Image 1: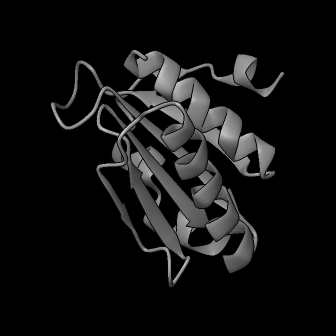
Image 2: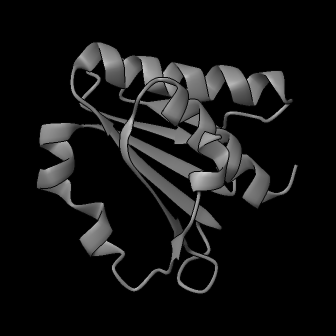
Length: 117
């Protein structure tokens, strides 16, 4: 799978667990750490864990290596490193605090709504 397909898979997995405000940023011109960043949030620790685990499970089933997964036990900010796609799943309160969207405000948005169908 190419990085755009991995992004769409992660977006779909997030939506399947009712993640809110799913946003993807194209990082190809801004950073060498990843091609895309996906940001989403849940409204409880259980939901945040469920979103991250769904992403991990769907990626694994497609043979995508999960490079790293951090923050699962606290479930306030979980990072799922899928190589060229990095997913940040926040608890809604922490998302507002860290505001990654503003930090990477120069990054173009990627429309991932097609993944929700």
